[in-house]
Image (cartoon, rainbow, N blue to C red; front, top):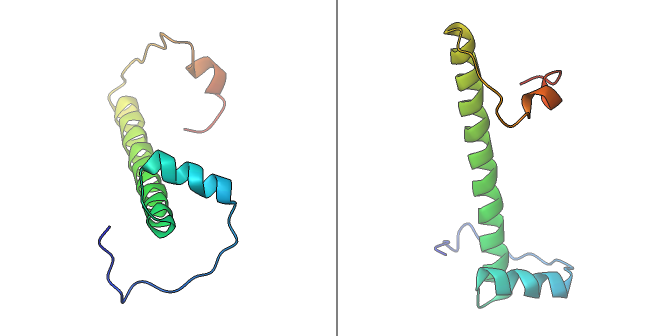
Length: 86
């Protein structure tokens, strides 16, 4: 992972060693620092993806309402959440 020394700072954490080793195995990283850096980047990327997904869903719903589109709930999920705000 390309990180400049200007953006890196020495940190000290008390971490669950077994979780760190499990994450290291899952991520295929060589060092604990690399494990933490990649895990942080994945959290950031996932949050950005979630935000984009919600925006796309909101745009779809707004367009569907404007265009009077009928959405057929073939899986029965809308009935469970129809009283929740979209």
